[in-house]
Image (cartoon, rainbow, N blue to C red; front, side):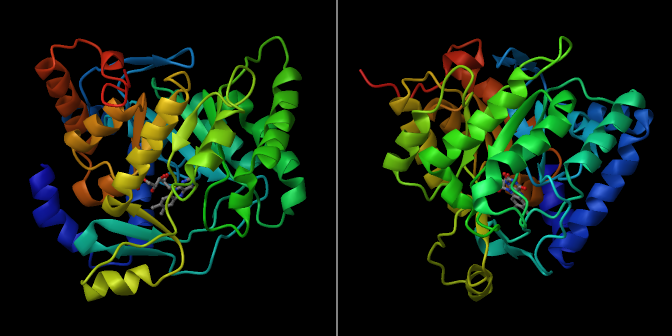
Length: 372
Ligand SMILES: Cc1cc2nc3c(=O)[nH]c(=O)nc-3n(C[C@H](O)[C@H](O)[C@H](O)COP(=O)(O)O)c2cc1C
């Protein structure tokens, strides 16, 4: 099926504008999501075998998740579980609805299996997402796997009011997801990445803690992670690690897209790399794994890491898990490899485990990063 997708389906899809195809695919998945029998059929073909991970007090049926940005407005929540994903991260969502940057804003560098995007958090706002998620629940279509929400900063909110902006979104959405990710690493909102500074991040997490503390008897504490840029220095990552711990940063999503560009002789790719925005896919793979390895070693494996960046094959997935990622996410791989990818990755990881004589995924966690 992956071969069929790559040779027969992908060339047809790639004739069209990237955002248009994305919109049509989401539209189809949204329709599928409203029909249980369609989701059941999808699950029959695309469902992944079990490879459970227990983390944050949640059970993930397998470690392969959908990365943020694919379903920003919760259009197809039930479909991702039917496509074999072990968890979904919806969003990025911002407190204020906003249109994002002018189109075109997604570009494919096909020779390198990469994407450059400058979406700029186009979304309907946190309250609209809350309504959408409430509707999936009342339809009885909520997926069985954990669902997270990626929180961004509204473009109109000044940087010094960022903490309140994130806190407003979290307050509106806290009842609708199992975990949250504070996104301070998108290159497409002016100056956002300055919020990765320890003091700024501390302010955001203090505001989020106040929301957590003001919970009612029926509300529980939600794990809140931070998503980092691959362009941060190891020193800057170490500063972020100092904020990790109970009641603070519960884990790190590594990484977002990069503003760096690889060298290429392919002229079509060169043209894409000249576009402003964040680069994802194969060229990001090595750096994202380096960041995971550094975070794992520096925290002595104590801080959960969700690894993301250039995962296309089971070998890529195994590399990131043995570098120290407890869970993984995919975005660009799905575009290039097709809808069987989650299943392929989980099956491949099970094979790797069996070859190593291991029975559970956590036994492989950080295997190649441990220092004697
Ligand atoms: C079109 C597009 C939109 C994205 N939107 C978001 C977003 O809203 N929030 C976020 O944290 N990451 C976003 N990302 C980054 C991905 O979640 C992921 O971190 C990155 O693409 C690296 O993974 P990949 O190589 O598997 O694509 C986006 C990526 C793409 C390609």
